[in-house]
Each structure stands twice: as structure tokens, then as C-alpha cells.
Length: 386
Image 1 (cartoon, rainbow, N blue to C red):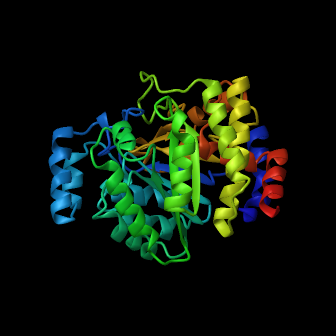
Image 2: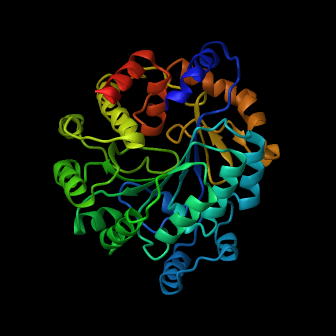
């Protein structure tokens, strides 16, 4: 993280003056819209996929431990292919992206996920590759993680398992029987992988469905799972999740009570290395979110569209997954990310963000924002060394 320090004044200049036009250091890729969960907080699984086929396909995967690439290409009508991602990576070039997130949907539904990571490692050379997962595909995920570690030998790999409840409570939110049991199998198998570049985390979404169970979830995570890192973030309405019609938000005071509990517990945690940095970021993220939700403003300047961005599974370039307004489609621009990034639509979106026409507590963007904000960065450094 501290290696980013020389770039901070450059990104601040980019945001203020429009120059130098840097590429994002935090990039999220929606590698698929497909998902085998049917979460009560999300509609992404409804996008462009024949759900009846997915059900039978997952049964086939569980039976054979196989998900063939040619099947993937037939099922998903508009998602970027491996060769298209390669062109995008080549257009961005090496050592621009520090933190790469491969999101979904469920990323491990892509049979070519390890190959995608190999291409990212070769052409982007990110310091960190972060992959969230629901953990359901326990027969596939552990072996795939080892393949990813081998495919991207210069990157730290973070696997974050999504946990929203204990036992049947988790299954109920996920609307998929066996979700908790399968997640536990995947988690324990991945936790047993011995590789110094691997960080295994747990992630929870706090919604009106589980806000009163945060202490129970936290205690289970810390006593039973003992991950390298644990973070919770509030449920949000996001373009990528297509969930603007869902009533999922806890009341502000309910969420604040959950965050206060987590902050109290974080003060008791000890960690080292990448997990120590993550712990410091989490503490300050929770404090920041309370201010954002309390005042409903960009409490600190947002760098989405400047230092962070997202590419949808169909090739749309977004400043973030909450706004989801497209800077341009990569297929329509010969897979040239810098061209889209420099375009008029991108400039207009950046101006809107700069003028604080939006606000949100999105975790991945908030992490970048805190690094670009001197008072927040000072608090992170202080917490890191204490």
C-alpha cells in the first residue's frame, strides 16, 4: 500500500485539473453475471442467463467437477470472452493497476478463471488480485485457487468468502439450500492451502435481514473460521446488482449499532502483513461510512472515475458499480480502455463526481478515496503502527 504514495499527488492533480490523465489503480472486473445464489439482496443472477440451464449445469459440475469453456460461451450471450479480456489488458498495460478485483455474479462459474488471472498477471501485473465468492462450488474452488496462485505468481491473491448468517439463516438469505454447508467446505479447503501469497477473508453484507445478527456472525467468524481478514459493508442499491426495487436497507441507527460493535471488536484484533493493512483500512472505513450515511454527502472526495473504475461483463466502463453510468463500451472502441477513459463521456462523468452529485459507502471505492485523502491516510498509517 505504501508504494502508492508517489502516485497520490498525481491522482489529486488529475481530479483537480484533469492532468495527468492516469489510469485507475483500483479496477474491478465483472467477469460474469451468472450466479448460483438467489440472494434476497441482489438480482444479478437474473441477467441474461437461462436459469433453468444453470440449475442443470451446476448439477453436472457437482457430478463431474467440470465446467467447460465451450459451454460457458454458449450460455452467456453477451459476456466478454477470454480473448476480449486479453485485448483490454493489453491496452491498459503493466503496473498501472495495483488492486484488481474479479467479481460477479459468481466468478468461479467461469471455467477459464485461472487463465483470466494468468492474462491479468502477464499484461497488468497487479500487486493484488481479489476474488469474492459464495463458496458454493466446493468441488471446484480449492483446486481453482491453486491454479490461480500458479497462474499469477507475482500477485498476492485474496479470496473473500461471503457469509451473511449462520447455518439455515445464511441459506435463507441466499435462497439456495446447502449454501452454508458448501461454503464451509470450500473455506476450510482453501484455508489449508499453504502459500504466503494467499490471503483468505470473509465478507458480510449487513441488510435488514441480518443487522441484528452481526455479533453472532462476527463471533462465529473469529472463533470458528479465523480468517486473515473480515469485513462487513452495508447493503446497497447498485446498477451491477439490478436491485433498486429491493427493500434491503437496515435503518441508519440499526446499521450504526452494528458498526459500533465491529469497531469495538476491531480494537481487540491483532494481525500482520497484508491483513494488518486491511485491518487498518477497515477501522477507518467503518468510521467513514457512519459519516457518509449520517450526512448523505461525499464526506471525503470521491476518486471513482479517477483512481478506481469497473468494467461490466458486457464491456461497459463504469466509474463505479453504484452509479453504473457508462463512459463507453469497450467492444465499440476496439477494446481500447485508455480511449474510453479519455473520452468526452468519461470527462462528463468525472465532472459530475467532482461536483459531488453522488455519494455512497461503496467499500472498494472508499478504500481508494481514503488513500487519496491526507487526514484519512494519516489515520490509516497511525492505526497500522499502533
